Amino acid sequence: AQRVTQPEKLLSVFKGAPVELKCNYSYSGSPELFWYVQYSRQRLQLLLRHISRESIKGFTADLNKGETSFHLKKPFAQEEDSAMYYCALKGPLYSGAGSYQLTFGKGTKLSVIP
Amino acid sequence: DAGVIQSPRHEVTEMGQEVTLRCKPISGHDYLFWYRQTMMRGLELLIYFNNNVPIDDSGMPEDRFSAKMPNASFSTLKIQPSEPRDSAVYFCASSSRDLNTGELFFGEGSRLTVL
Image 1 (cartoon, each protein chain N blue to C red):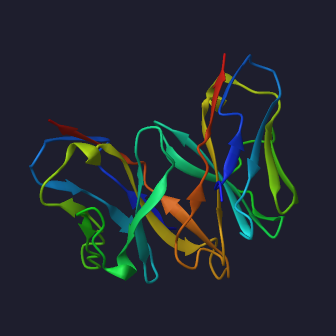
Image 2 (image 1 turned 180 degrees about the horizontal axis):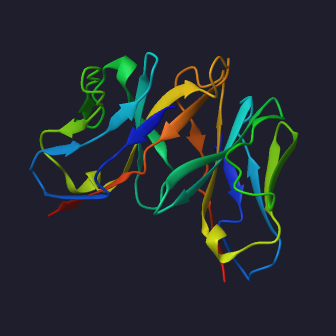
Protein backbone atom coordinates (compact mmCIF):
# COMPACT_ATOMS: atom_id res chain seq x y z
CA ALA A 1 0.00 0.00 0.00
CA GLN A 2 1.17 3.50 -0.70
CA ARG A 3 1.32 5.98 2.12
CA VAL A 4 2.45 9.56 2.61
CA THR A 5 3.36 10.91 6.02
CA GLN A 6 3.73 14.54 6.94
CA PRO A 7 4.70 14.48 10.60
CA GLU A 8 4.05 18.15 11.34
CA LYS A 9 0.53 19.55 11.34
CA LEU A 10 1.78 23.06 11.97
CA LEU A 11 5.14 24.69 11.39
CA SER A 12 5.88 28.26 12.43
CA VAL A 13 9.02 30.07 11.33
CA PHE A 14 10.19 33.67 11.32
CA LYS A 15 10.50 35.61 8.10
CA GLY A 16 13.93 35.08 6.63
CA ALA A 17 14.51 31.79 8.44
CA PRO A 18 14.98 28.53 6.54
CA VAL A 19 12.00 26.27 6.07
CA GLU A 20 11.81 22.50 5.78
CA LEU A 21 8.49 20.73 5.44
CA LYS A 22 8.91 17.02 5.96
CA CYS A 23 7.41 14.28 3.84
CA ASN A 24 8.05 10.56 4.02
CA TYR A 25 6.50 7.95 1.79
CA SER A 26 5.94 4.24 1.65
CA TYR A 27 5.77 2.70 -1.81
CA SER A 28 7.10 -0.48 -3.34
CA GLY A 29 7.56 0.83 -6.87
CA SER A 30 9.44 3.74 -8.37
CA PRO A 31 7.88 6.79 -6.75
CA GLU A 32 6.65 9.98 -8.35
CA LEU A 33 6.21 12.69 -5.77
CA PHE A 34 4.68 16.13 -5.75
CA TRP A 35 4.06 19.07 -3.49
CA TYR A 36 0.73 20.87 -3.61
CA VAL A 37 -0.03 24.17 -1.91
CA GLN A 38 -3.23 25.86 -0.79
CA TYR A 39 -2.98 29.56 -0.04
CA SER A 40 -5.72 31.23 1.98
CA ARG A 41 -8.93 31.48 -0.05
CA GLN A 42 -7.30 29.89 -3.08
CA ARG A 43 -7.50 26.51 -4.74
CA LEU A 44 -5.20 23.66 -4.01
CA GLN A 45 -2.57 23.74 -6.75
CA LEU A 46 0.55 21.95 -7.82
CA LEU A 47 3.73 23.55 -6.50
CA LEU A 48 6.39 21.24 -7.85
CA ARG A 49 7.10 17.70 -8.98
CA HIS A 50 10.28 15.79 -8.27
CA ILE A 51 10.75 14.70 -11.87
CA SER A 52 11.15 18.29 -13.01
CA ARG A 53 13.86 19.01 -10.43
CA GLU A 54 12.65 22.58 -10.49
CA SER A 55 12.64 25.46 -8.05
CA ILE A 56 9.32 27.20 -7.70
CA LYS A 57 8.94 30.37 -5.62
CA GLY A 58 12.30 29.53 -4.09
CA PHE A 59 11.16 26.07 -2.97
CA THR A 60 13.02 22.90 -3.86
CA ALA A 61 12.47 19.27 -2.97
CA ASP A 62 14.85 16.37 -3.43
CA LEU A 63 13.74 12.80 -3.58
CA ASN A 64 15.83 10.64 -1.25
CA LYS A 65 15.01 7.02 -2.00
CA GLY A 66 17.25 5.73 0.76
CA GLU A 67 15.36 7.66 3.39
CA THR A 68 12.07 7.51 1.45
CA SER A 69 11.72 11.25 1.89
CA PHE A 70 10.74 14.22 -0.24
CA HIS A 71 11.19 17.21 2.04
CA LEU A 72 10.29 20.68 0.81
CA LYS A 73 12.87 23.38 1.51
CA LYS A 74 13.32 27.09 1.15
CA PRO A 75 16.37 28.98 2.45
CA PHE A 76 14.56 32.19 3.42
CA ALA A 77 10.87 32.13 4.29
CA GLN A 78 8.58 34.94 3.18
CA GLU A 79 5.23 35.95 4.66
CA GLU A 80 3.50 35.02 1.41
CA ASP A 81 4.66 31.43 1.89
CA SER A 82 2.14 30.98 4.67
CA ALA A 83 -0.18 28.27 3.41
CA MET A 84 -1.19 24.63 3.69
CA TYR A 85 1.25 22.26 2.02
CA TYR A 86 0.47 18.73 0.92
CA CYS A 87 2.90 16.09 -0.20
CA ALA A 88 1.47 13.63 -2.74
CA LEU A 89 2.52 10.30 -4.23
CA LYS A 90 1.40 9.04 -7.62
CA GLY A 91 0.70 5.36 -7.70
CA PRO A 92 -1.56 2.79 -9.33
CA LEU A 93 -5.16 2.68 -8.26
CA TYR A 94 -4.53 -0.92 -7.23
CA SER A 95 -1.82 -3.47 -7.90
CA GLY A 96 -1.46 -3.99 -11.63
CA ALA A 97 -3.91 -1.25 -12.49
CA GLY A 98 -3.35 0.91 -15.54
CA SER A 99 -4.95 3.87 -13.82
CA TYR A 100 -3.32 6.09 -11.26
CA GLN A 101 -4.26 8.10 -8.24
CA LEU A 102 -2.60 10.67 -6.03
CA THR A 103 -2.28 9.78 -2.37
CA PHE A 104 -1.95 12.88 -0.22
CA GLY A 105 -0.42 13.37 3.18
CA LYS A 106 -2.47 15.07 5.86
CA GLY A 107 -0.81 18.38 5.18
CA THR A 108 1.35 20.86 7.07
CA LYS A 109 0.23 24.38 7.78
CA LEU A 110 3.15 26.77 7.40
CA SER A 111 2.93 30.04 9.25
CA VAL A 112 5.62 32.64 8.58
CA ILE A 113 5.87 35.16 11.38
CA PRO A 114 6.76 38.71 10.32
CA ASP B 1 -11.14 28.65 -18.76
CA ALA B 2 -12.71 29.19 -15.35
CA GLY B 3 -11.20 26.00 -14.07
CA VAL B 4 -13.08 23.37 -12.10
CA ILE B 5 -16.34 24.81 -10.85
CA GLN B 6 -18.04 23.55 -7.72
CA SER B 7 -21.33 24.44 -6.13
CA PRO B 8 -22.47 25.28 -3.58
CA ARG B 9 -19.44 26.88 -1.93
CA HIS B 10 -21.04 26.56 1.47
CA GLU B 11 -23.85 24.36 2.68
CA VAL B 12 -25.31 24.17 6.14
CA THR B 13 -27.91 21.51 6.70
CA GLU B 14 -29.48 19.49 9.43
CA MET B 15 -28.77 15.88 10.18
CA GLY B 16 -30.88 13.58 8.07
CA GLN B 17 -31.21 15.92 5.12
CA GLU B 18 -30.02 15.11 1.64
CA VAL B 19 -27.01 17.02 0.35
CA THR B 20 -26.00 17.31 -3.29
CA LEU B 21 -22.67 18.76 -4.32
CA ARG B 22 -21.96 19.62 -7.94
CA CYS B 23 -18.88 19.80 -10.08
CA LYS B 24 -18.04 20.94 -13.59
CA PRO B 25 -14.58 19.72 -14.65
CA ILE B 26 -12.26 21.50 -17.04
CA SER B 27 -13.35 20.91 -20.60
CA GLY B 28 -11.39 18.12 -22.22
CA HIS B 29 -10.30 16.48 -18.99
CA ASP B 30 -11.13 12.81 -18.97
CA TYR B 31 -10.61 12.17 -15.27
CA LEU B 32 -12.63 13.49 -12.38
CA PHE B 33 -11.94 12.97 -8.69
CA TRP B 34 -13.88 13.70 -5.53
CA TYR B 35 -11.86 14.30 -2.36
CA ARG B 36 -12.88 15.04 1.20
CA GLN B 37 -10.73 17.24 3.41
CA THR B 38 -10.85 17.17 7.22
CA MET B 39 -8.41 18.26 9.88
CA MET B 40 -8.09 14.75 11.23
CA ARG B 41 -7.70 12.80 8.00
CA GLY B 42 -6.41 15.34 5.51
CA LEU B 43 -7.35 14.79 1.86
CA GLU B 44 -9.07 11.49 1.17
CA LEU B 45 -9.97 10.23 -2.28
CA LEU B 46 -13.64 9.25 -2.36
CA ILE B 47 -14.24 8.27 -5.97
CA TYR B 48 -12.64 8.57 -9.36
CA PHE B 49 -14.20 8.71 -12.84
CA ASN B 50 -12.65 8.11 -16.24
CA ASN B 51 -14.71 9.13 -19.26
CA ASN B 52 -17.77 9.41 -17.02
CA VAL B 53 -17.38 5.86 -15.72
CA PRO B 54 -16.62 5.27 -12.03
CA ILE B 55 -13.26 3.51 -11.81
CA ASP B 56 -12.89 3.12 -8.09
CA ASP B 57 -15.26 4.05 -5.30
CA SER B 58 -13.53 2.22 -2.47
CA GLY B 59 -12.97 5.52 -0.70
CA MET B 60 -16.66 6.26 -0.41
CA PRO B 61 -17.26 5.97 3.32
CA GLU B 62 -20.71 4.43 3.36
CA ASP B 63 -23.77 3.64 1.31
CA ARG B 64 -25.08 7.05 2.27
CA PHE B 65 -22.61 8.46 -0.23
CA SER B 66 -23.15 8.21 -3.96
CA ALA B 67 -21.63 9.91 -6.99
CA LYS B 68 -22.65 10.19 -10.60
CA MET B 69 -21.23 11.61 -13.77
CA PRO B 70 -24.01 11.69 -16.37
CA ASN B 71 -21.85 13.48 -18.92
CA ALA B 72 -18.36 14.82 -19.44
CA SER B 73 -19.16 18.21 -17.99
CA PHE B 74 -21.04 17.42 -14.82
CA SER B 75 -20.74 15.29 -11.71
CA THR B 76 -22.61 15.11 -8.43
CA LEU B 77 -21.78 13.80 -5.00
CA LYS B 78 -24.81 13.03 -2.90
CA ILE B 79 -25.09 12.27 0.81
CA GLN B 80 -28.39 10.86 1.99
CA PRO B 81 -29.03 11.02 4.88
CA SER B 82 -26.35 13.41 6.06
CA GLU B 83 -24.74 13.14 9.50
CA PRO B 84 -22.64 15.61 11.54
CA ARG B 85 -19.50 13.56 10.91
CA ASP B 86 -19.87 14.30 7.20
CA SER B 87 -18.95 17.91 7.89
CA ALA B 88 -15.88 18.62 5.77
CA VAL B 89 -14.69 20.41 2.67
CA TYR B 90 -15.40 18.40 -0.46
CA PHE B 91 -13.15 18.99 -3.42
CA CYS B 92 -13.63 18.05 -7.02
CA ALA B 93 -10.57 17.83 -9.26
CA SER B 94 -9.97 16.94 -12.87
CA SER B 95 -7.00 15.95 -14.96
CA SER B 96 -6.11 14.85 -18.44
CA ARG B 97 -4.30 11.71 -19.56
CA ASP B 98 -4.51 9.77 -16.32
CA LEU B 99 -2.34 11.96 -14.16
CA ASN B 100 0.45 11.77 -16.70
CA THR B 101 2.04 14.89 -15.27
CA GLY B 102 0.75 14.33 -11.76
CA GLU B 103 -1.21 17.54 -11.93
CA LEU B 104 -4.72 17.69 -10.62
CA PHE B 105 -6.78 20.82 -11.09
CA PHE B 106 -8.92 21.46 -8.06
CA GLY B 107 -12.12 23.38 -7.60
CA GLU B 108 -12.56 25.81 -4.74
CA GLY B 109 -14.33 23.22 -2.66
CA SER B 110 -17.74 22.91 -1.04
CA ARG B 111 -17.72 23.43 2.71
CA LEU B 112 -20.41 21.26 4.25
CA THR B 113 -21.66 21.68 7.79
CA VAL B 114 -24.17 19.18 9.10
CA LEU B 115 -25.81 20.21 12.36
